[in-house]
Image (cartoon, rainbow, N blue to C red; front, side):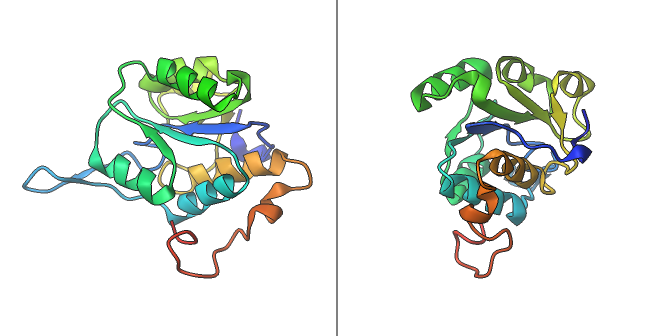
Amino acid sequence: MSGSDGRAIHARAVVTDFDGVHTDDTALVDADGRELVRVSRSDGMGVALLRRAGIPFLILSTETDGVVSARARKLRVDVRQGLEDKAAALRDWADGQGVPLADVAYLGNDVNDLACLAIVGWPVAVPGSHPDVLGAARIVLDRAGGDGAVRELAERVLRSRAGGALAGAGASTPSSSSSEENP
């Protein structure tokens, strides 16, 4: 289903892949082999709003990459990397959070996300995802990876909370440049 209907996502926790979700799935590699990726500050604000609302958030990645760790530190969220079995890591994390998998939104884009998408109540994909991921998704967002997809997911989750929690979680437009307001 397309994200254009803007419907709320009734999740109690949010888990995302990193590459292709927080990024546009492109990596710049310098002569020394260091990778750089582009992330969206809007996505960072979405994560901050979820944190403020008390919604647990996790980044899962099959790769072990310093850029993923650095972004998770900046966002002040949990991260699990270098995973061969992302679904097992997701189950363990959700159990530790006391959140049933039926109440988890998982945002992915590629075939290594299929097992996670299959076990959660809210399987979500970014546009341009692998066709199998699009087929497994309950919702396909409007915004692309690295271009506001995480923010869109955050706002939909917050919209589902009683009384329109988005307004209660903080302004949707940052008014200062502190690191919390400009993740």
